Amino acid sequence: MRKKILISIVAALTLTMNAWAIEYSLKDNMLKLNSYMIQMQAAFIEGNKDKAVRTANALNGEAKILFGDENLMATLLPKGKENKVRIALMSSRTIDDDVVIINASMNTGHWETAQNAYLDIQKTCMRCHTLIRD
Image (cartoon, rainbow, N blue to C red; front, side):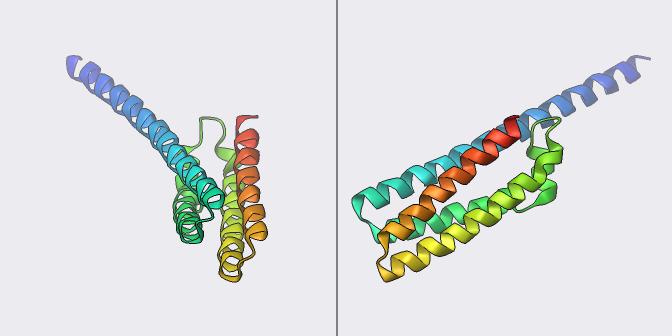
C-alpha cells in the first residue's frame, strides 16, 4: 500500500515538473525571439545592414525550430490550446518568407522593403499570440 502511494506521489511530481518545464521552455523561447526582434529593430534604427540580416536569420532559425515542428508545438502550447498548432506553423512560414524579403532587400539596399518585412513579422507574432490566447 505504501509503495503504491509513493509511486503515485512520484508520478504526480514528475508530471508537475514536466508541465512546468514545458511552460518555462515556451516562455524562455518567446523571450529569446523577442530579444531578436528588439535587436533587429535597433539594427534598422542604427542603419546596420549586417546586424539586421544576421539577427533576422537567427530569429528565423529559432522560429523554425520552435514553430516548425507540429509535435513540439502541440506539447508547448497551453493546455486546451493544442488544436491551434496550425497557427504556429503558419506563423513560422510567414516569418520565413519575411526573412527572405529582408535578406533580398538588404542586399539591394531597399531598406524600406526590409523594414516593412520586419513589421510584418511583428504583426505575425502579435496575431499568433492573440489567436492562441482567445
